[in-house]
Image 1 (cartoon, rainbow, N blue to C red):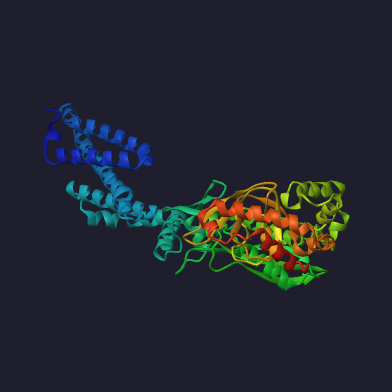
Image 2 (image 1 turned 120 degrees about the horizontal axis):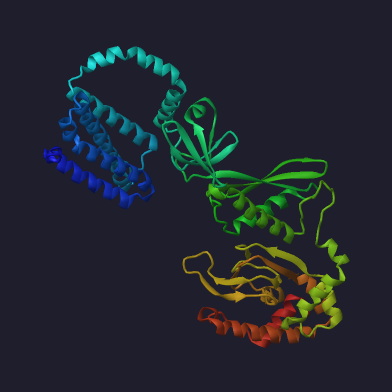
Length: 499
């Protein structure tokens, strides 16, 4: 009967286990379903042909009829070994949190195929020693003709043996840079940041230098990045270094390591231009350009708050918006500043001329998202007028018990108690988006208050009402003592020397 080959042990158990292995792979590794379909097709054809082998013998195919079943056994055995290898390398080992390289999988399968072939040849009565002797010359010829391919294979093995490359590492090889996605028997594949796949022969990697990005031993992998700044050489380097380092210390940028902290160095000065480099450690290698952009934005915002702008086109004059440029405020800018002051209750009692005078004292202060604008407990004698964006008000910011009290938007102010009384900041203010503010210092308001001391009365009333509103906002804030109107007036007069 033509089904008799399947009824002879161990084919039923092998067939059942093969179906089970196929089902496991189909469920656990969807990416291999294409090759599994081909495996299933070959296995089905092989089983059908093997089951029909008795029919071939009955029709007098002779030696060919006897050879075909042996070839089919060889094919079916190799397909079975392939299923075992895929389950081992793609399912079981990953479940044990170990992901072997593709080249290890390929070499293991090749070894298994070779052993199976030898067993089938021996079963067929072939003397393997004679096969090895007679094939020595052929092996030498093949080795010479395939030296590039063999070189790539051996190079891939060598790269794995000394762990020069590992999956997931970021590598620069020649003009290409990307993450190692696969190390095969012939080549290594890199996934670039642009979504491209670069295939590099293993032999090239063995013959040429390549760069593995980031620290590789003992610490979190991090890659040092350099951001160049060109500024006026007349500016004190100590000031530039302090401003830029503080700007990055006061914010949290995704992908920027806190340790080691960012640092700024002066690389040199030539023709009135000082060349600075801000160095930070990147932990998200895929987002290198994006993180560089975020760091530059924070640096430019911090320098802008200090009235410092990078030099453009090697010009040797500082493009400064403040404070020298304030004397030449455009009518539109002056109007916008006066309008911002007019909307603020604290300055409602000012005359139009006093608002113009105060507008000329305002300093432009931009902040990037995540920047700490002012910190709880700090002593700062200025207030901020928010003209664009949103800020968050926090208690105990940066601590486990941190709590957000609320948000402020366009047209609101904060820090008024620090400017009017010298009191420490009661909360931390953080930019929730890109923010533009005007900063008003105590000395900018002093001349107006000295000319009209009676303004202190109305201002103290406004501050008293705002303080009471803040105290009612949260229980935590109400624990802070609310100063009476008279006490606030006394503190303002003392702080501005009006007594």
